Length: 103
Image (cartoon, rainbow, N blue to C red; front, side):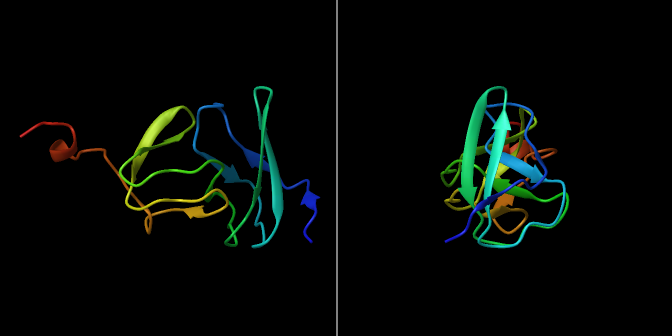
């Protein structure tokens, strides 16, 4: 059974879907992320490298993904808490006129 480790992470907005690892975190680690009085505890499914994101809440396919209070992309599939969040499961929306109703 894994124990919660004091890994360094950052999450700026309690409505964010992801947190960012400030150090490498091995798969199977239980990570506790606190943001503005809310605490999220997740078991990482994947190893997370420094600067990479992991989900702290479930993210449904086709939903916006929030980091630092801003939408950073759209989920291309369902993402479970503890999963690495990167180009393999989100797609950016910036400069995508087709995703903003711009023709």
